[in-house]
Length: 263
Ligand SMILES: Nc1ncnc2c1ncn2[C@@H]1O[C@H](COP(=O)(O)OP(=O)(O)OP(=O)(O)O)[C@@H](O)[C@H]1O
Image (cartoon, rainbow, N blue to C red; front, side):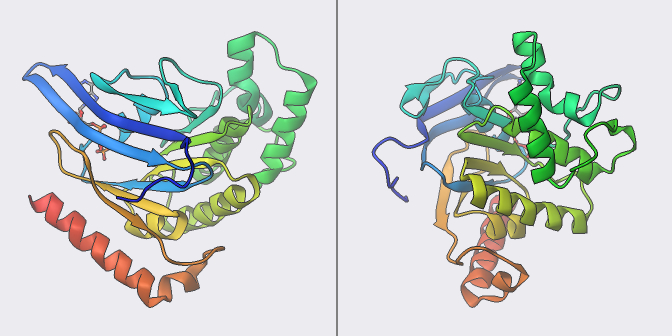
């Protein structure tokens, strides 16, 4: 298991267990999850469908309380949603009647009842950062899925969180837009160096974007089964995927996931 570089990691899971009460009885989704995510690290999470990847993320976000064990962010136990975390979901759920700028500042308005001029200025800068300059007064209804997801990313970055949680953020996009968004995310990450926890089903996306990849085991009782460093230097491009060590990593991950799916 890879050890954290810093004494206090950005995120630390310690012996986390998550049980759900279901109609069929108790379901142990996660068991003995131990994981440290370093500050500024880009961590991708792979694993079979239903193994508990989103559950891990929702626990870090403070949206779910683990049945046992603890999750800490910068050394503090997570007990509720925190201001230093931003979240991007698969679908950005934008308000159709509000402009892109209003969509980006909406969480501030919702939480504090007002939006400061500085926050509006930041929304403007973020929309520029995600390639939507000059569109801030548009409404989201006629935007493509990729553009809508860019608004979702800008919104998650508005309060300048240290940690960005992304749950299959590009899975609803077509293949080309998805690749393009991946490169854009890499650019954003290189500029702002957030700690990123990125859940995906795409091995290539994980390998292209992440510093480190964990593979969860099959549930029930899923845990971290593999913890791997991605060997290619940054910035990664299509050429990075031609490196032998990257191809070996993709092949290894494919074998691992196929075996786990079959298990
Ligand atoms: N609120 C809940 N109540 C009951 N069971 C739940 C709840 N949330 C998740 N589960 C169950 O916990 C397990 C893990 O779910 P989770 O959504 O975290 O998996 P996942 O790896 O993100 O799945 P996928 O890759 O398909 O998105 C699944 O069996 C799911 O049905």
